[in-house]
Image (cartoon, rainbow, N blue to C red):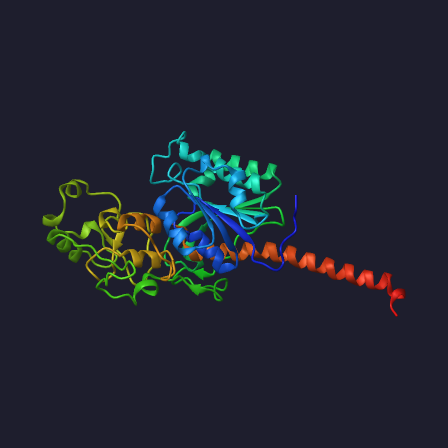
Length: 375
């Protein structure tokens, strides 16, 4: 196989199960070049096509993709990296975590691409629960049999400049050096230490969205909902950091009156001075989590959720409100992806430097050996 690294162009990558492209955004910000992406969701593919005019977007079931035909569509002869996050519902702590859930096997199609394209590096992200599964053991074993060194670690997005507490399993495989995960760039609020004095404090909800108008403008997905009078009355009773337990008895649904224990995030309000909790796909429904705006009496908008996921405002999201919310909630935070990509980029730069040094040594040797030919 050809191990030569292109020293004049950005390393290329394919994003599998790409969704709206959060992972790709971070990688491109770090210096990689996206050449193709796949996803089964139509509106995610439309978002990808809108923002990346010159790439191949393969829409549909990944198990049906003909890899040889797929190769012919690409604009480059080889691919430097494969990335992506196989759907995680079968592993997620929020789901039933069924042992035989077919979604747990989608990693096999990911590794099929790795085997076919044999990239220098692969990057897989997923929920932390994957790390404790039989599937992870098989993923690692498969990669090692293909010749990759594999390192896996759970990273906390908030430690890398994302204003959100969100943990992801990051698996890196490399055949051009020993892969490493990035060191945290931010430290826990109020816990400055000798180890963290050169880092920045965690970014907060206020850092991310305070500049947006309290009243949604309806522009660029800063779109509000029309709550009922009862919903609005409920919103007004929840203080920053509060939750459903702050509702007066007369405003509580019967199911909450009967259930005196349970999640303290349901119907929770965010706080300006803290990171948000994990942004999921139904962040526009306060009954699903801590999604009330820190100050305004409403759930956060799509634009605010996208900011908390570190999507650039310039990135165009395509689809209905529900379609786009799903794309945002399912995405890898772009800033986490960028930090991981910067660490991976060092592998490519090290090989590039090695190639350059060999070239210099070869030219020096050539000049010395054939000096007698000089006039």
